[in-house]
Length: 501
Ligand SMILES: [Zn+2]
Image (cartoon, rainbow, N blue to C red; front, side):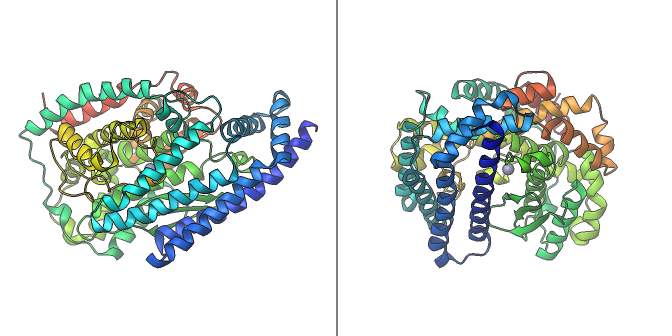
């Protein structure tokens, strides 16, 4: 088979794979937005079936032969084609011993875990989820035994599926540096006499006004509504269905408008990443190579570096006064800025402030490493969770809903959480690089997101699917991954807000 023939065959099959995956995404989106509780199990089976059909297509002998022929002829390919050949080769090595039945089992376990997690969370009772969690661990461990060149450190193999090339040894080093600087800084912040007003944050706001805010925010940061839609869910997420269809979701808590405000900017950031990738990525089915850490770096760039800056608060302040006249009547822009950066140890990760957020990740990282190692019995997990919260943040959950059951992630496996913290480290590094070329605060305060997004497109988005994170961050910044930029940023910002000397 010649290389051009191989490329033609591979892309023909990938087009079919894409159709099945698209349909599976629609089903998933339906489950998370409007599907009634009793319809969930069947809908989950439909999703698992579609995902399995896609998987089978890539396990077909003729496809594998063509993909490997493409890989052999990679030297004669253009940059995008070569990246596709590399990606298919990596996937082949990863899954060649995994059968369609193995894949189907994984999807089924994960869907059942999702259904059980919902019930357990509703009942505030971890034991209703315990069996499913053991099943998730079982299929995760099984998937490792099927990998080629698996690392002897089980957790590293799982981590690698979300953050290519990352290891627990490196994470231990990165999180160690975070712990060393953030723990004493949190203590100083907690001891500060600075008064930050927050009374207005819980004033009631109706859904309609919040939805108007959500649409305004998305439009402001450059989200294109002709290629994207906004829905509502319990757990906000973004699903890139295709080149012209980006779904983001949020929820409207009548007594907490900030939850909506920041979840919308966060998910909007994910959507901007997808909407602004090179058109060739779609042509070559290369839109899903970027890692979760790369994705989170972008969503958190918009949410925190931009969204929690004084410049951005100044920009949106007049609109918030217009949308929420009673709530905002006696609130200054400076008071709003301080309020959105208020630091307080809390139990719920998704509601955590920017500063304590990293602690929530370190806690999950520690616990899931123990789960994967098999060092802790499932029944003991809620206690381990609560103890670890007490150790890091000095607070203890009263139930499972506010504790171990709060996140959906473990229904799909382990190794995802660290990517959130990595995202903060990446974006702190490229923020500093961007600052050398662009007056970021000025651009933000003038609403010039064309400038911000243009820089992001050229430097951050462009090669995200073609370079492994390690090479990608070096390509953008000229430096290796370090937590220092992120820690320096937190220290400078919160020292100023809390008037620490
Ligand atoms: Zn995210």
